[in-house]
Length: 417
Image 1 (cartoon, rainbow, N blue to C red):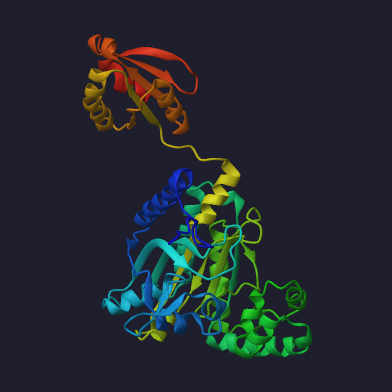
Image 2 (cartoon, rainbow, N blue to C red; image 1 turned 135 degrees about the vertical axis):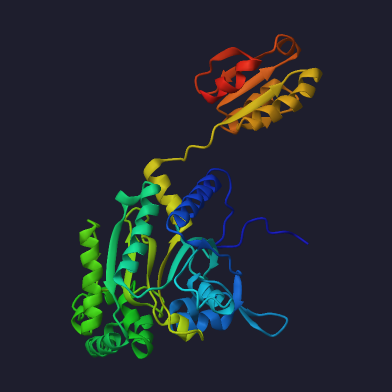
């Protein structure tokens, strides 16, 4: 039996520099979750298919084309999670938390969608997710947007993105707008793409999300949802944008923005960039006031967002070049006694907070090559003579300079490199 040694199409391994920054993004998100009092939650990677199929919309691209769904040995239909929100709502209901509002949840991990792989689009990818359940107030929408901005700012990406915002209104607004949009699109039915023709029958608002260039041309003259909002929905949207202006947060109204899932209500938003080609959405979210009730819970309002970790990593690399790793040091003992003493020395240095690679390779040349390969900040060499004199030779790998350092001063010396 032969083994296929390449990862499955649409997946990839995360290691070395990429893994370092992946973890850095996650750690920033965890710190921000603490600052905003969000508690971490971990949900299963797969759920009963109804959790996603009923909530995301049977006619949505995610459900109709992209979910990994299969029947397990118990004859149960299982779906690998394509997003976090529905899974978190399911967890809230099944764990009896609906009476403990408000709730703030944070999570991260892999999600799965059977999409066409391309730059910054994978079939297994990773997301950071924040959900705020309970309040129905424009100020909670603003908190979520501010939290997203905080994350982008901490990663030094705020100046690379723009905030696009829209409202999809309440149910009455969407009904009124759907009728107006359908009436307009019927006049152009012969020119619509195949996907848009299918959506026209089941969910015409989704046509606004079409990537087909001909569809986009047709939509340029389409009616705006802002003209079909109920008084309450219109007031809600005006309060959100007014608060953004009060906080001096720049935003770009985009009346074509509807997001790809059916559960959204009122505010929807995206942070987009031009630096990632067609995969320009870095972070996106919105309000979903009816989702909890749809899943069998009480009527609970909520808002949240998700950010693609791989896209955050790629955007950072484009702007800042390769990431800088933590300093690490290469310890090279020379001789049998030095190798024995190295076991003590390495633990002392690690106890001082230093990343140490202890190398027992056969030749000094190979060990120096390994130090270069691992981007060591400095190499610490010592043999029997240095042990007797309580000294170490420290070579700075950037400058190439080497100095003798007394053992009592080694930790302080390394801290300054």
